[in-house]
Length: 143
Image (cartoon, rainbow, N blue to C red; front, side, top):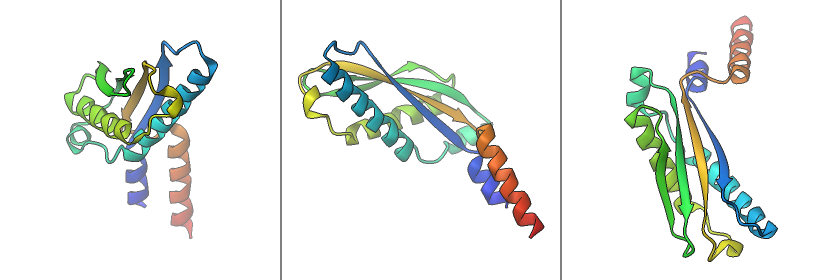
């Protein structure tokens, strides 16, 4: 029972959005696909909550800017710090790794654009997840 609660208590959420999207609707659609794949890979590659941050009870939100130049070179930089270096470093590492694994859509070759990835580091699960875990624990304790 304790393992269920512990696993649910380490949450990392990710949001993504684009900036300065090209006027071409097809390119906007391709950027949206790229952004969606990038956000999905960030979720998939996020790994464990940084142990040093967990031990010290650190939480925060980091924003990473992902800029793609006209030659499809990707640069990831910290746009907004969480206030904790260990969380910022984890966010940059995860986004860089994810960005290196997302293929550039053919329709975006030669197009410069940027997108932001916001990573929320929280030691508390979202209320919905917390409620579900608690009800599972109660059910197991009864049977």
